[in-house]
Image 1 (cartoon, protein in one colour):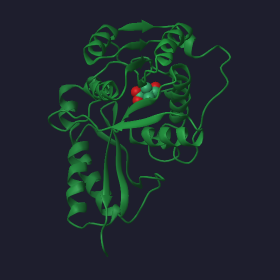
Image 2 (image 1 turned 180 degrees about the vertical axis):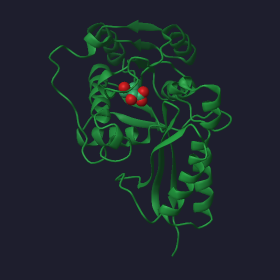
Image 3 (image 1 turned 90 degrees about the vertical axis):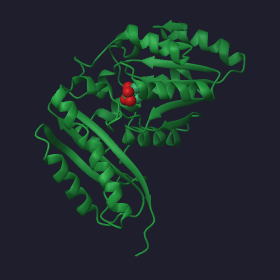
Length: 285
Ligand code: PAF
């Protein structure tokens, strides 16, 4: 496994693979790897000749009061896990490598970034789409792998790739969960024991919603109220949003029909967690 911090060195190395006709998969991460990241690596290893993992905590996707400074890091463990999972190349740039002092260019996806996380994190997706574009330009992968846990991010990146004609397949992999349902996230490490116990409410409320919809409930308001009631029973929980949206437009819906996404963002103590559920609902009225 090779490790690069420099863009030109990385490019030179990847060029050798490309001239040999090898396919390259990219797994962009912010490090502190867990089984969710490893599932993306495993899929890339299966699909491609070469897998590149990037580890970079991208400052432009954090708001001024967010956790940029305390974002968890364990580079040695990341390298070990990456190697075991079959990563060929790790790219670990510094801020000065990724953003020149006079950086002035950003990529923005309109509309899809207005709702859900975009409401409380207004500059977040601009940071994500900018850094992902930069990583795509640096690595020039055949495919790039992202997790379904960041559902809005996945939809926004797919839209960007389509609109800007980027010749890259975007592969979205399923959410990986703990045994009790909590979606894996590097931020779970912030939770104390009591908060960790309460955090399963996101998954539990999504499962309950699925059951109600399967039993014929068609009102988004009724489902959202039920989720709200369940979450509010947890003393450490503060709701950011509970939304039911059309999966293509990410606009709120009143009537549950077609491809829908139920998306939650909830603070447990000081830790903001997200989770979601996709459903295809074909109810006959
Ligand atoms: O999902 C993440 O970890 C980040 O948003 C990404 C895609 C690596 C961009 O910094």
